[in-house]
Length: 213
Image (cartoon, rainbow, N blue to C red):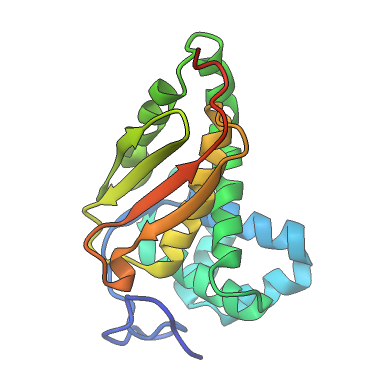
């Protein structure tokens, strides 16, 4: 099986991405959301095919994983890699959709509560970005700038940038933009360390900003 991940460098037994190395840890919520998305949108048979092709570690996480547990990020990326291959969509499309679904699940109640007290999308966006460390043990999410038409978001300090992980963040940014009050947000990964760029930056365009009078 071909591996598209940045992690492929040193073999790990049982992994469809033979070179995955251990780097940062993430909360299992992301992987569990991804599993739920595949089953909901493509059915139990497709999910079974994805899980069957994954390493024993990912299969074990599927069986007994708890959302608040930390686990190696490479397991999440492995699932994205296999799901992309099994589902046969254009590269990055599945990962983007999975990231978007995760954002919907994880921010739904928080965004609703915050909007009751705060009218500024910028405040909400910066607040959500500050929560990165609650779900990821390395890296930092920064809001570089925001105006009435677009925002730029940077993800810095990741030990092993990965293209599919970044695709999931593209979907995440789009849904987060809508949650904080942007109208018709469109997220674009304009600069990617996994593609050889110096920074990982997303541009979230929108028109207009609701409640920013």
